[in-house]
Image (cartoon, rainbow, N blue to C red; front, top):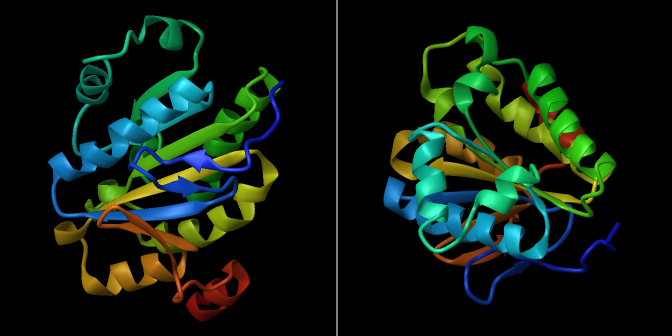
Length: 205
């Protein structure tokens, strides 16, 4: 098993992040999403990371086609290094969102990858599923807070994708409070609005 890297290439030119980072990325459109998502996954594949991606606004085939434009994905898919799934199969499996179930999904995915010999994992989730009128979606920000307790368990980073125009200002404020770092305009910023999970969840009780 390889040693955990001291820094991780995000895929944005010149931008490095650290193992254990939980980052929210804000962007204006689907095309901008792909400019973040595709390089993030490419860097992971190149580094030998396990890459787990969940998309909502497009099908996995869209992401695989964008990735495969200049990369032969066959070996990565064959070795189960890359998984691209739909929100309906993950966040909203069974027709509802459960923070407990989703945290267990990441635990299985990332823990399983580490057990299989991957030295590092990078996860990414597109969060527009939370805009649907589905049971449990109100748990979104509580789930995001709890992810901060999950990050230290494994050598990993998690990137959460938020299309700015789709979410209300109220939700975005809570999203800021639950992510220690923010990707905005090609820069990763330490987030002064971040609250530790216990502190944030106490405000929701």
